[in-house]
Image (tube, rainbow, N blue to C red; front, side, top):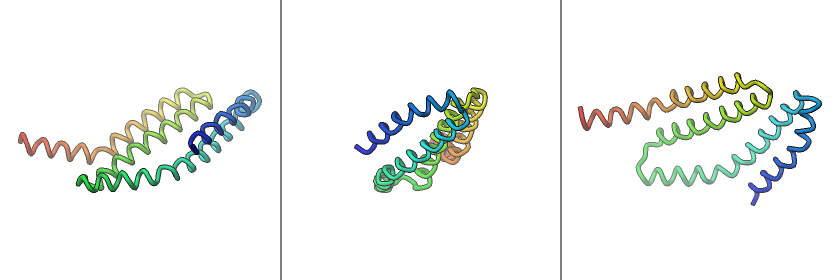
Length: 128
């Protein structure tokens, strides 16, 4: 139910944000950043129990904890790069948004490299 309240809050902020964009684009971006930070912090408090349950589930399955951390880092990098790209688009720069998305993709690939190595070693163990 609280997530619906957060969505409603975002919709309510949309009207003043639209008016602010018309008269002061800089302040509109600052308001957007503030709302994103507020909602993200609140949302993270809902995410904590889910992450704890997921870690227990993976531990029972015998999945390496380091691989789980890499997975979460990849998801976090994707979300952060998407939010930054959207803020760049709101600021009027499609080029910066594309650059941020590309940097986020490269970051995810670099973060996931240990998992790629583990999969490669596993395959070479079977076929090598």
